[in-house]
Amino acid sequence: MNKNERFVIAINRELGSGGRAIGQQLAERLGVPFYDKAVIQGLQEKFSLSSEEIERLKAKKSNWWTDMLQTFVPTFERANVSAYYQPSGRVPDSMTTEEMYHAETEILKEVAAEGSCIIAGRSAFYIFDQHPNHLNILIQASLEYRIAHVMQKRGISREQAMSIIDEVDKGREQYIRRYTGTSRYDARYYQLVISMDGLSEEQAVDLIMRYIDAQSK
Image 1: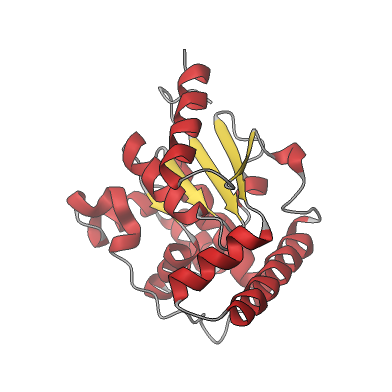
Image 2 (image 1 turned 180 degrees about the vertical axis):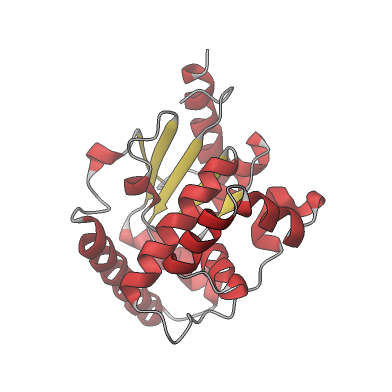
């Protein structure tokens, strides 16, 4: 990936690995927007974006996405869109999971077309696998690391943390397999796979930046 040209970085991560924080810090270092699941769902809810509505907007005006961001996201906040959107965590009642996936895919493509960005989670690693200037990263950690991280962050017991991790792992893998036909753990989709055991989030970001700088020479 060449950081001197328009790029998209897709960060897939295990719950409790610190992948979201790494993505946010990396976005700050590179000076680009950061998008995650909450942002994408927030966009869908705020603008009632089904895949059909997206197609209607695209047919009506080619730069609809740019206009939308300029209208609803203040310039000084555009580099951290997640700070602006406050989604309710629900999805429109009329939309099925499959419709949500297709709408998310279209939104992510528009996000990447708008300019360089970092996208955490969802199926971005699959959607942008053929992007001409992309970097796919998988952030993972041992189960013990993840349990400790979730316990500390949420203030819950070990048993609760284990239950949440198990549920989220299964849900994310089922989602990816259902709509992409592959696994989020398929290393062939990633240029970097980082284990967080023994690393701080800052060190992980440093590692990624060194890789990017080397690729951009």
